[in-house]
Length: 182
Image 1 (cartoon, helix red, strand yellow):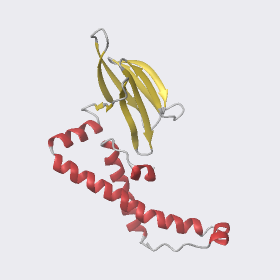
Image 2 (tube, helix red, strand yellow):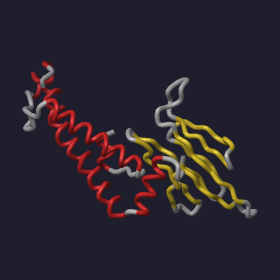
Image 3 (cartoon, helix red, strand yellow):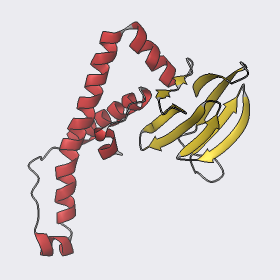
Image 4 (cartoon, one colour):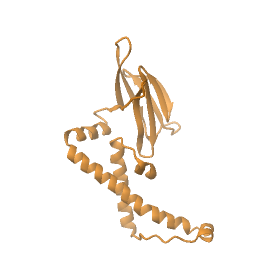
């Protein structure tokens, strides 16, 4: 859950919270965002979502590995990300970044490298598999992947890429590599 404290034009303070259940709702499996004001549900929307709040709106979008965007956009166009709940996994990752910035930076670099390595290994192998389909092979030929790894190594690299993607999702980071992987 991500939080935002807003002071309206009368000086009243409200805490808005956005909850996105990434696994989807139980009855139909669609991913929805819920907006709470001071603990009460005030809006529900499929994603991407845009919720009006005093002084602007909250934009929410989800990607393949977590939230792609959850920002407060002020009426002047400036933006700021919402703050993760300290008890959530995202909040604990933000706390690690605050308390141990070097460890956090090292984990961030490792997660990027894991995802990048996963893509570098998987894409050529996937291209080879696709070009072995008879109609594709007949029209463009068969691509021979320069990367030939045993199944165990492929599984290990795939697991590392998933861990790296999970860590990036916990940091609420989204970049070109995440868009390729999702």
